[in-house]
Image (tube, rainbow, N blue to C red; front, side):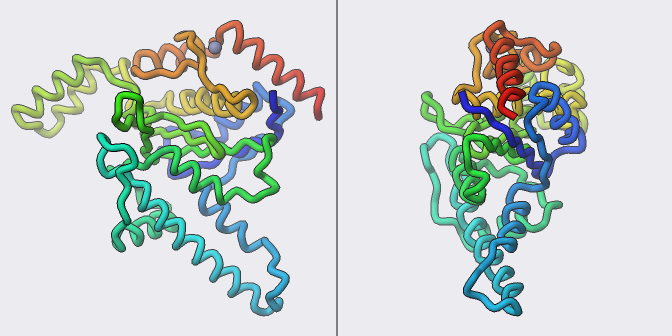
Length: 295
Ligand SMILES: [Zn+2]
């Protein structure tokens, strides 16, 4: 077991329903001896930090423009890479193509302008984590540092059934947790999709989708759901345990570490209070205790 002692929470364009401070506070309750630090946007944080790196070759008077040039170069490269991991065809593995100039420019604008939302774009989750992970400086790249990116970006991973699936989370360095994924990844009740199809067949009218959502209210999580922070916290807990043990999941459907594929499973696992199976209850206890011994 590895003991993560520094946990960084990044907030990338989250909906107003999510409070990063509250997620941090909930984590502190479980890991009272770890340092839990909310940071802003992942890319902006790490690209801004580049300027703090000394460049011994440059004269002091030139350092400022050197830093700006370096940041610009990194942003350009990031934009190209992000545009390159868009999933073009969810039925094909690695359907990436060389991105168009406009797509790269769009990514660059989106990185630097936090009011632009990535609607309708699906990224490969593991590729996204790999690209972001390279921005983490060496001194924060140890097993004791946990980086968790909370984002509204939609990503998916290639499944055994030979197609991409939307995902709530990808556990890696950094780990990614998507609020859009919470809404879109676990399946809604079958009847909801059937009725939605019927509505689409007769032509969707204003408000009819809202009315349908109302009918199934409580059976799935929607974008402005006030319980989103609590759900995000549950997945952040999984990310910390992944960092400590290499395994974020649990087969017990009532445990908060359950890997939910249906909305009803997500609601049961994440929103019934802090319920854990016996194994995870002990593991969390052990982590908290060992932590206090280490510090
Ligand atoms: Zn469990």
